[in-house]
Structure formats: structure tokens, C-alpha cells
Amino acid sequence: MTDARRVRDRLVDGGVIAVLRGVDEDDIVPVARAIHAGGVDALEVTADGKRASEKIAAIDRELADTDAIVGAGTVLDAATAQSVIDAGAAFVVSPHTDADIVRTCNRHGVLCAAGVMTPTEAVTAMDAGADVLKLFPASSMGPGHIGALRGPLGDVDVIPTGGISRENAADYLEAGAVAVGAGGAIVDDDAIAAGDMDRVRETAAAFVDAIDSARGE
Image 1 (cartoon, rainbow, N blue to C red):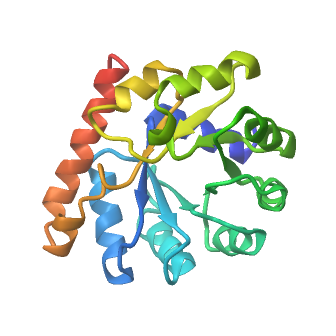
Image 2 (cartoon, rainbow, N blue to C red):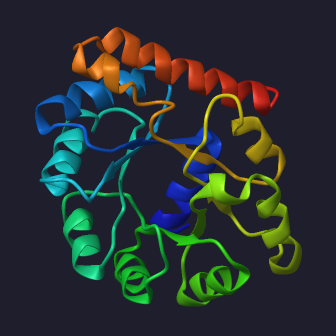
């Protein structure tokens, strides 16, 4: 089994990816630790902020002895993909499909989740070798769009991101999503600003409870 396949299986088992966007470098490690303590194994650091590679490396070191999976999101080009992979990213997520990003991930055995919206984009991503399809922004189309894609394309792995909340996560899972990605619904910015890591952990735990309930666990 490839490393990408192992990561895919772990993402599916966990059911949720926490998207850490705009978290300061000084806060990123305690925030990641609190979210992981809340039961979220997959942590995605977005690459559109400063020093993303350093943040990924810091989390990877901090949680090296745990079951956490650290990846990068909002990866827009192959050079950034290479940088975050060098920093230790176990998966790479982009909001679009870029064949060069996919090839970079495939070369290193790193899972690539390519962003799609239409069937054409989905087929392009699959043909390029993407491991998972990121439906983004999910809120624009709703849960039913997953079934619409899977109808002609078959049993593809879709992870919706963008507008996912505790209240609607079950709808996306029931529609066929293998997992969901969530930012603000998991990463409590107010709690982070207040330095309240207990509340960060509790918010993450509440989201995990919603995923478990949706799966009947």
C-alpha cells in the first residue's frame, strides 16, 4: 500500500480535516495540539499565509508521536507543493486542479486532493492522478452535487470543503462524501485570540461528535 493510500484511509476513518487558516505562527502549535486533543487527526495548514512550511514542520515535530496527519491546503502551484512536502506535509490540497501539483505529489507519494466543481474538472483531476477530489466551495452547490458527480463518474472519493458546519456535515456524508473539511466550524478564532485552548479543544470535539453521530458511531 502506498503512503498516499494510507493517508487516504486515515482521512476517511477520521471523517474530518481541520483547516487552519490565518493562525499566527506563535499560536499554530498549541492550536493544533488542542484540535488534535479534541479528536481531529487531520490538520491542514493553508499555504496562503506567511511561513506555511515552517508552521507545518512545527506541528509535525510537536505531534510526531501521535496519530496526527499534517497537510497543506490552498496550494496553488507545484513550487509550493514541493515546499510543503519538504516541510513534512502528508497531504496536499488545492482549490483547483493543476496537473503539475498532482505530478509533484505523485512523485513523492503524497496524497493530492484536487479542487473541482464540475464533471469536466473532476475527470481532469482524476486523469491527472489526483487521489481525492475536493469539492469546493461546497456551499455553492450543496450536498446533492456530490451524488450528481458520482452518478456518471462512479465511486470517486469526494471531500467537500467550504461552508461545512456541525449542522450540515451529516448531509454531505449521507450524500456520499468520504470526509469533510472545515475551517471556522472547528477552528475557533475567538478562542484562539483569547488564548483559550480548552475552548478550542471543545469546539473540535463537538464537531467530531457530529461526524460520529452522522456515521452512527
